[in-house]
Structures are given as structure tokens and as C-alpha cells.
Length: 247
Ligand code: PEP
Ligand code: MN
Image 1 (cartoon, rainbow, N blue to C red):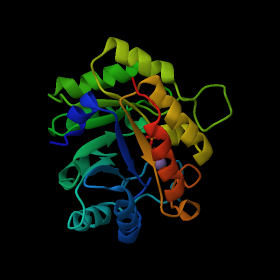
Image 2 (image 1 turned 90 degrees about the vertical axis):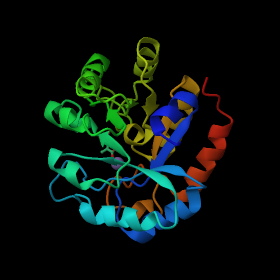
Image 3 (image 1 turned 135 degrees about the vertical axis):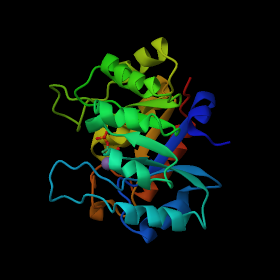
């Protein structure tokens, strides 16, 4: 019931939440507004940041917040891990995310693949789709059979947008492999207006689901503040997506 891998195979799904778990109230407000009876909540606690002085995530304190939120809400928690050491700590995590920067961290993949949880594997922004498949095979080689692939934008010579969303990769992966493929328009778009357009385009294109960053107060977010949708923008997007056919 509610296993994300199985649900993505059946119907279009959305994974949502803030870029980073910052405090209890922030995530409470989000779930109180958007959880419904159940949702796939995503939020980072171990953040892979370009600069060491940027917010690095709450670490285990973030997991305490998640535990407390389960008293009031039903959700599966999707969370990136960046190191094998974190694997001992993440009983609260239902779906493990491998971020773009770790897509080819093969030791991490082999450790994560053994855990028995679904894995959300993001494409590296400098990697081909076949390299993404290679990483999926690493997970499979140690027994992981619930792999979700995610296109999140790649680096090209285009200098508009944060990354270039490679929708053709989604079609290629769907035509040639059996994995569910989701799209992250947030990290590709880099600013909320673009995220909204890319989300609709990706659904129309035929991906199996979306990963969207939403924050109660984006201008004051501790990470990715330009791309996180505010609550009104996200409500409007959810309304708009109802009119977009995914198949
Ligand atoms: C994220 O999903 O929060 C993230 C850091 O994304 P990516 O690994 O795609 O850059
Ligand atoms: Mn982010």
C-alpha cells in the first residue's frame, strides 16, 4: 500500500516538499496544507552544497522532526543520503534519494542497494542516460528491485535556466527500460515561473511523476530559494496539472 515504486507504475504521482527540512513548523505548515490523507514528502537533511559555508542540512535533528510529524500526518519520507555512514541512522526514511552529484558514487550505490528500500536515482548533470542505467545496474547488482529514475536537468551550452531539462531522455528511458521515470523541474528550472512551465511540459510529455520543491516562505529558505514554489503557486500548479494528460 502506497509503495512509491508500485504507485508510479500505476498512476502519475507527485513527490513534494521543501528543499531542506529547516524546522518543525515549516514542514508542519506544508503538510497541513498539502498532505491530504497521505503524500510523498521530500526534504533534505544532508544537503550537498556547492559551498561549505552554505546551510548543510539539519542532519539527524531533521529525522527527529520527521518522527514528530508522523504523530499528525501520514506520509512516506523521501530523503537524500550522501554517505554510507548515514545508512545506520535513517529508519525514518522510506525512500532513499541518490542525488545528481552522487550518481556515480558506486560504493554508495552498492551500500544503498542492499537496504531493501526503494531508491530514487537522480541523473548526474554531466552524465548520459546510459551512465544513469549503469548506476541503476549497480543498485540491482546487490538486490535492489525498486529503482525510480529522475531527470533533473543537465549542463549544456544553454545559459538560460539553471540546467537544461532533457525530456528526450525521459522518452528514451521509457521506450527502452522498465523503470518508472520522474522529472524534477525544480532543479532544472531554477526559478519558480520556469519550474511551473517545465512541470506541465514534463507531465504532458509522459513522465510517471514529478518532484517539486515547495516552501512556506521561499525568499527566506535556507537553500534553493529562487526555485521553490510558494503555497499559492503550488496550489495553482496542482490545479493546472489536473488538465494536463500524462499519457
Ligand atoms: C535535491 O534534490 O535536493 C538536489 C540537491 O538535487 P540534485 O541532486 O538533482 O542537484
Ligand atoms: Mn533543492
